[in-house]
Amino acid sequence: MKEHRPWGYYEVLLDDTNVKVKKIVVNKGCRLSLQSHKHRSETWTVVQGIGKVTIDDSDNVLLHKNTSYIPQGSKHRMTNVTSNMIEDQTLIFIEVQHSDDGIFDESDIVRYEDDFNRV
Picture 1: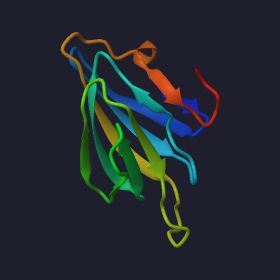
Picture 2: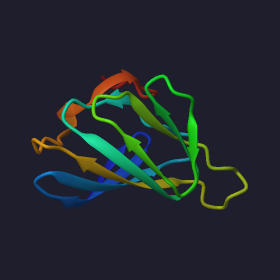
Picture 3: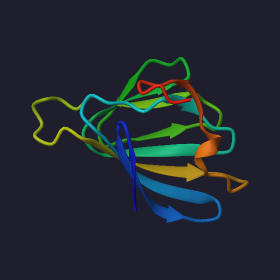
Picture 4: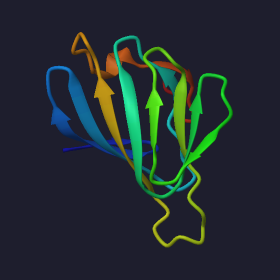
C-alpha cells in the first residue's frame, strides 16, 4: 500500500512491535520536512540516487548507497540531490524505525520546516 505525499510516496514493508520498515521514494528536487520524533530513532539506507541528510545543526552529508543513523529526538531531513545526468532521478531509501514503546504513527512527527506548508 502506497501512501502518497507531496514529495513522493512511501510503502510500509514491515510493521512489527518495536520496528517499522518503509521504502521511501523522493521525487526529483524534493525533500522531506525538517522533523523530529519523541518515540523513535531511524536508520536510512539509500538504494538509488543521492540523498543529502541534515541532522540537527550538522553539515549536510551526501549519501551514496550508504547508511545514516538518526537519533531519537534529533531534527533531520532527506533531500533528493540526484544529478540530472542520471536517467531515473528519484531518490529511494529504506527507513528502519526503532521504538522501545512501539509508537510509530504519523502523530509522532514534529515539523520545524516544510516546503508544502504542512504542520
